[in-house]
Length: 240
Ligand SMILES: Nc1ncnc2c1ncn2[C@@H]1O[C@H](COP(=O)(O)OP(=O)(O)OP(=O)(O)O)[C@@H](O)[C@H]1O
Image (cartoon, rainbow, N blue to C red; front, side):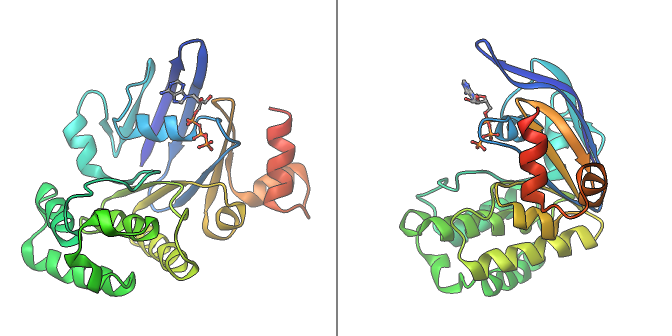
């Protein structure tokens, strides 16, 4: 569960996130959508302790990211918007590093690395440095590093960017499997078809404010039965 409690973040005179209040239940896939500059990445950075809010607090499985940062960080895995990290490590070194940090048992770790490398066709690349990887391969190694620990809460910022169709399909399957195990998946996306097909609920943000949180069916019931998510999104964000 993720509880975002009246969170505000201002940069200079710009309120990037404005009194955002949202509770994301366990066991669901939530798509976080909004126009460019709406405040999605800023929200994700505050959820994960990269940025501190000016006001409010965020709890991950009941642990405050500000007051109990280590405990809160044990609860989630993050796939950030840019995968250009740990470039001097080999893929396998990075995965073992993540396994060490999250104290994943060696045998379990080995099995997960093998299964993930198979799924993402990364077996041969594991002994190469991340620096030599393409954008999509870097994205995949970061996703693998998160899944080694099977986190209770999986947070992803624009995860489909740069992935080929096959990897994107597999990632979506994994997100579904993760939620089916009773874990929470929260991801931001501009790809409305993905949100439409994958999510149990959608959260729409505009100008830093939450303008809708609920199922697509309820949004349709409020605004128009036959509209696509794209049409609904344009309608609700236009008037925000
Ligand atoms: N470090 C910063 N310094 C100043 N302004 C910032 C900073 N980070 C974000 N902003 C501003 O805050 C607002 C929200 O940005 P944010 O990156 O959270 O939006 P977003 O919804 O993720 O956008 P996009 O869909 O384009 O990635 C924007 O107006 C942005 O310019």
